[in-house]
Length: 170
Image 1: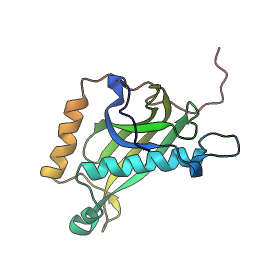
Image 2: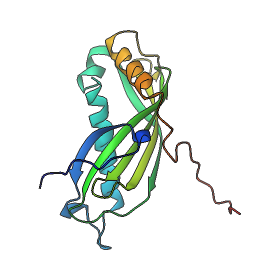
Image 3: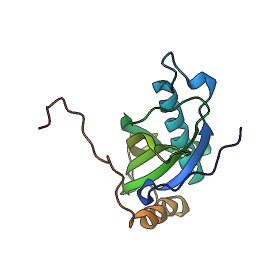
Image 4: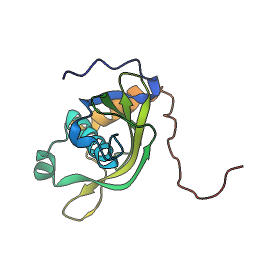
């Protein structure tokens, strides 16, 4: 089934990096998309986003540099049902070319509702030293800087920087 063009998403969403549809293998015993499927889709969106910026599986072999995700926070906000057209969006919230604060949204493209978010912190790593390392100046680093600049005027996505807490809210 082809995926419908996404409805108008908020400017804060960033750029669409992945599209698809909820399939039969994504559905759990409750009749909606399973948490593992949300995680898989958001991980695929992360990979597609990085590949779109030029980071491919060759990058670590050519440069002895790579990305390690050191923190991940996923929020499940709305259920998705079998056959629903979905898309994922990506934002670079900030980077100093060593640390990358990223925010992904998963959207129901039929209603425009955000169904999940994934906020991550990734480190650019020197694979020989096994330590965080600033990305070398050049075309690859410039792609990230250009995207940060292009997205800098957008409002922050709702939910950015949320903490998990068991404290009661009054």
